[in-house]
Picture 1 (tube, chains in turn purple, red):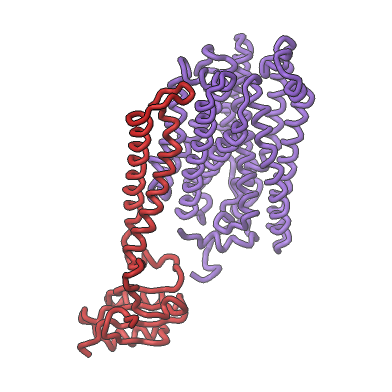
Picture 2 (cartoon, one colour):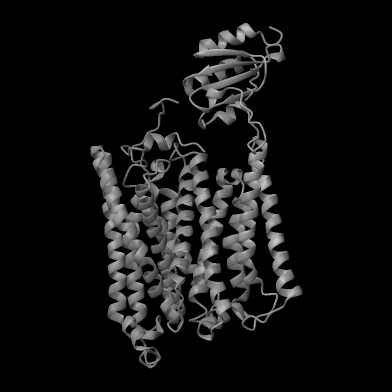
Length: 398
Length: 178
């Protein structure tokens, strides 16, 4: 059990080539082709909504990677030190993901495919305070400022970790704690607004104060699931020999616990609106609980609550990487459905569907995510070799 | 010799004690139990301690709470005194969920604490079972059942070799508190 008895090569780097690279590039090409098809076949609103869904999802997963990093630093967690490179690679992709999201939001806003509050005939329906909040300039500048703040802090925190590899010492670690704390404060106050703006304002007549936390919960669960899937796939490909069942157990607990947290927030939002029964609020759930969206509405709860609770409850399920992989992939699909139910009923309504545009956009963004994350992962070593808690992480046992 | 019931090896260092466990197991001497003042990682697997059944208790208590709460609200809101609350049906399941959840947690938590105390003889009125008092402060203790036919001298020498600072031959299982 003594220190430094392991024989791991912490300078090992991920080699991004072969099948993974080809598949992710093919995915991106399919995505571009389908989006082009969507616009040319006259489904521009539906295509824009799907682009918004997937780019928001993409940005959220990357932001969740950064949030994971920040939490680990602020809590001075030891167990996670050996796997920090994966969330770091997410954080390093965040600026790129943010640019994609801002471009899609801006294009959708100005082409009147997204955010109907921007059309002159609808703007008159809002009270003056909302009309001020939902002006294109203020709206876009909020989005840009928030995402820039996250991205810059993400770059600072990841840069400190690579500096630590080169120079060692504790100064990078201490600075990481400081910047992580700053990030968490900014992130905590601005994510609800980010969700209000990007998703909730699609149905600008309706509002819910829980919506921001609801989106945060979805973001955090899907980010954790994405981190876990990436780690399991890397491990299966023969990398990260130092990651063992104990680390996956912890990640499994995170995924399990925050799935229940997501359900809690989901239910808190639903119950208050159900109980108060005010027409301007219930209209949101009326669209989702009756007719076309009813099966999807319940399926959302089954996938995102029942499946992690029933499958991941036992200790063994969290320690069996195949089981964990299946649950995490189910959850990633489930949170796509979650976003789908947030976005589609209030915009396309009954005209929404699940066809080539949805599938193509998903494939495109999965390819884009895999390509960008793996490219950024391949540029640094797979373990932060001078991290002060690396040794503790290697001996992690639960 | 014959009235020795348990041999206790007292260690100052947990690593020495883990080493002692290995030594004893190599010599096919079964260990009755180990007492430590703090949790030690990996000791459960080494001693072959069975998985805790506290989870089963938690589940049973929790599900009891679920049914108690649901049954209680159903009786109150639907059977006994139906009220019109905001025009909702009397049997409005979403309204039942928070209370059902809370009582599930309450029953589960109380049940687990109770079961834990009961199994560990920690209730008021039950005598605490302690084989070696200093295992609650600063000693790591391995206990061996002396009536299993092990050569007690061999056990002593193995414990000493592993670094035990004191070896006790007890003629009763638990300390008395008189």
